[in-house]
Length: 465
Image 1 (cartoon, rainbow, N blue to C red):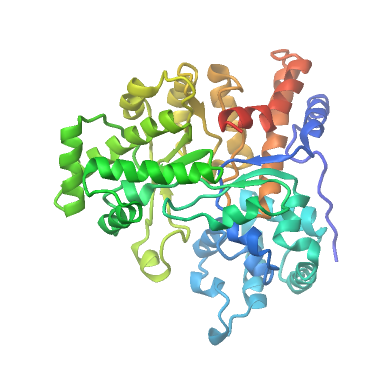
Image 2: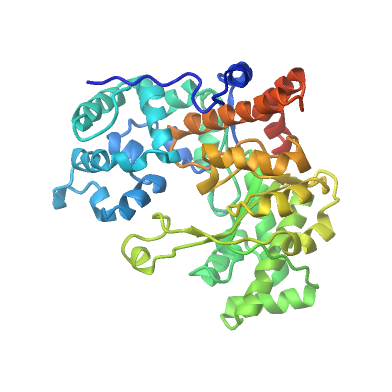
């Protein structure tokens, strides 16, 4: 079969002298430990340390980047689920991916999977219908070996810090067990309270009732806030460093206690109208900022995504199946009430992410370039790809520099993709810095320090590690 070896200078500038600078910068950090302060790898994966079932479970199932593009090509999502009763074994699903692999050319997901095949398994044969079975067998054989279990991969990837995303009522036993284990590297929970803050979430009142019941708090607004504070303290005791908030609209509102109590009772009773529900959501973001000022958790906000865009897909397959779509996002006015109250507080760290690239230079860089509390989140979701990362650097650096960013965020559920994604960001950053050096805008020694800090000092500072 044809063997295609990866170019050691991939993603770096083509112009020879600039590429040489970039390669030098990249090699400084190529093997540096990985700090992953926001992601969705389940802690149970590392605790159980069970072998991956097959190549499909490893690289296809649950990877929305992959399944959504196959769906766009006409593949039913059901045909990507291994189900013996329907005659779909893992090899059949893998052959489906291979038959459509040409569609992934130029995409970030295609690049990452090729990085994983080569970097993790040493497979350099291009994926396609003719090679599908041989590659499937090679991966399957590797997965049966101890060195390819989750904990061995975690340590092989040199992951120094990994944050998961967890429900506020999770007792975090898996995290406690991992902390007491011999695993090299730290795994920490992240407080994700959206379903307890947003009245438009299905089952919101029941969620709040469980929250109050679990903490023994009364059913008023003060009791509700106390319950959230208690659960945050539980997370901090288990090593959490941040609280994450996913909202469609970035809107904040500071209310007096009486109005907040009225709105709380209305949203619990289900009598609040759309404007009142919006006001409650906005006020709770301000309350979450207050709690971060008090307890030190870094506050991260991921706005700008319309969830479950396809009702038919939601009905058949549930949420998180590839049909969440970005929307235009406004930051400056929406975040102002929160920043008016807490933006100048010492030690308050607020990381703002965007899926709307138009906000980078217009709003996010100026905000991070003034408020000591505001940091620029790395390109997220559809934008954590080579060209998009480069556009982000170009859009924000002239206003905010390099040190007002969060460091790279992989935001992934797939353990195998973590090193591929971080390597992508390191290569793109090396190329961007090399361009500044070649243009005479940044000295080489300064670029070398920045390169080192982007993968180490900066994420440690932002996430208080």
